[in-house]
Length: 327
Image (spheres, rainbow, N blue to C red):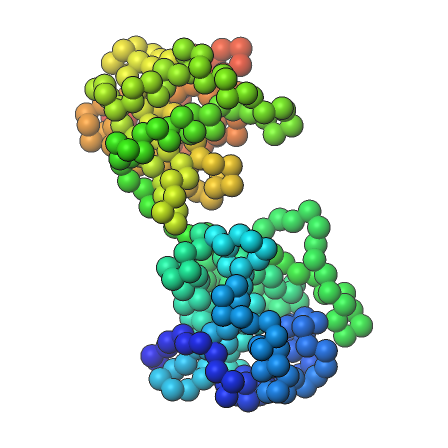
C-alpha cells in the first residue's frame, strides 16, 4: 500500500457515498448532518460547498496510488487554533482487515500536529460503534470523561456520543538561558492549590523561601532545568537547586521543583519531566535529591512511584528524598 492524503475533490463523492450501505451506517458516520438516506454525491458536494472552507475546516481524501480508499474532515472548534477536530471518518468497506481506518486517522493526526500546528486532536464517536472506537484507540486516542453526555436522536433511538482526544508528544530538553524568566510562571504553578480553594495571589512569590527556587537561576552550581515543549510552547518545567528551601536536607543535596500548566496535567508529561531531571542529576554525579510536597497533593503517589521516600513528616507536608544511586 502507498497511502497519501490529498484535498477532497468533487469527483470523490460518488465513490465515498457508495460505502454507506445502510442508513444505520450512515447515521454512525454523520449523525444528523445529512437529512435523508441515501446520501448522494450531490448531497455530499453541496455539504462540502456550504461547510468546508479550506481554512477553519478541511476535507481530505486518502488514496492508495490513485484509488480513493478513505475520507475525513478536520475543523477548528470555536477560535482555538491549537485544536483540530476529526469528523466524517470513513474508509472503503470492501477493503476491511487492511488497517485503512487506523492509517487514515493516524495520517490525519500527523497532518494536524505537523502541518496545522495543533497540540490537540479530538473527535466524537457513538457508543454503538465499537469497531470505530477500537480503531481510534489503536491510533492513540483515549476517552475523556464529560459531565454532560452529547446525544443524538437517530432512527427512533437516542445515541450517546463518546468524546476522545489525543495530544501532541512533548519534547523534553534543557532550558535555554533566555527562557529562564519563565520559571517564575512555573514556580507559581508549583504552589499546591486545592481545586475548591481561592487562587493564591502571585504576591506570594515575593516571599524569600519561595523566591529562592528561581532567584538568579542558572548562576549557581547545581542549577539544572528540563522543560517540556508542545507546539513550540514550554508547558512544563522541572528544576533543581542545591540546599534550596522547604525541601532542603543539607547544602550538598539538590532540591527539586516541578510544575505544568493546568491544561497539560494528567497526560504523563510530568512523569517524563521528572524522569529526565533525575537522569540528569545521576549523570552529574549526585546521589540524592529532595523535595517538599503537600500531604494532600496527588503528586505524592507519583513521587513514591519514582522512588522518593518520606524522611520527615511535618504538619502539612512531607520531606522526601530519592536515593539516585539505587536507581
